[in-house]
Length: 111
Image (cartoon, rainbow, N blue to C red; front, side, top):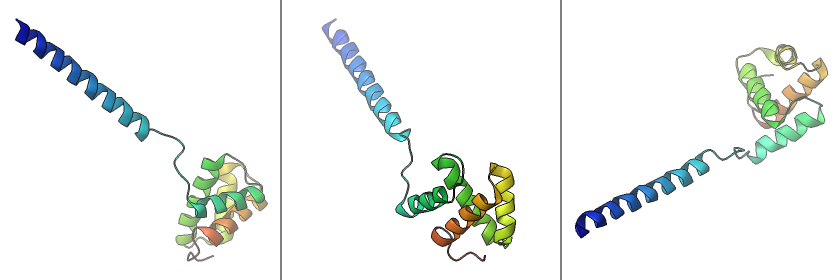
């Protein structure tokens, strides 16, 4: 009977240890915010200086979208118009964001 009781204790200890390990791993994996590179922070700062609205995640998303659109050859004016309509910014704010994205994150994109 003692052996059966010892096995139950071992199984319970193993289950608790596995549970603690999974909880610690899940906490690390779901940590927020996602680290931003220096280049991305520089872009965010420039876009903020141009007055582009939204939080940092929205500004970074808009900047990445600007780069993608610039690489497709839409031109800075077309990209600015598309972003202005989508994000509710003024044309000047959108143009500032596109300029900042081109200068920092997608320097090889056609303008």
